[in-house]
Image (cartoon, rainbow, N blue to C red; front, top):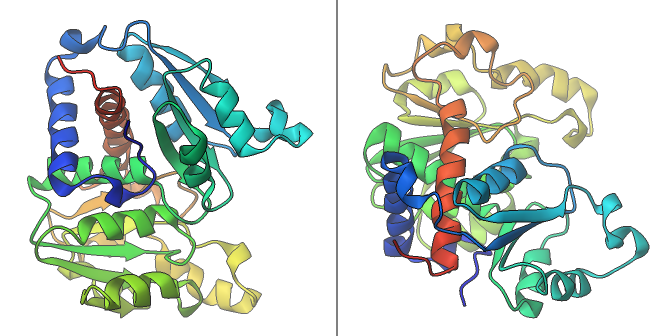
Length: 305
């Protein structure tokens, strides 16, 4: 029995196989419309979600399966004090596979230790968001035709962004990735990524505070929200916030084939005047999330067609 808790749970070859299956599903949806008939997915979301939860549910329904679950901790027995371990042991009686999001780091690993069905980590605190990572990899491959020889910029909240941390780990396994970090000092990558991951694996990266200083070099820019609540000083937030808003004017400095990704939800970090630009990939990225989750569910359930 396999689980997906963090990006390194699958080899590069296994990830590529999942991405290939996602592409096959897009090409021939009818072939897979009963792939998970009589199978049930449980979505256990202890914190809010739109895209991740709905894309999991849409994925299972389009595979011909069933869905049950809850969308907030308040609507589950967690509100009564039930532990994650007991919730998982109970839900395993009703479902064939579980997708779980939880605000506490390490909760997905706890779930895995008590599960009798495959567990998919749909986000655990600031640690990992591996299915978003699969979504991002599929999007990059579809937009660029490759997952190597790329200059990738991560912009905004790099300290607390679990999608950023997961994608960095995943991309590091492909050849010739030039990592570019764009953030205020207050929101730079956490130490465990810089020291325990980049340094220990001899991976280099560049750090910038201004998007304008490097946007012209990027093949991909991965935008995230700069969060006011992360700053101790309101003046620092006001000074820096506009530096991390991507708009049509800044895009004039970018490559004509730049790909703009964002895990969403967007607040104001990408101006709406960018939406009509063919380089804007973030809504195509959301659709890719459904397809890659369909492929992942089939893989973890051992379903081959």
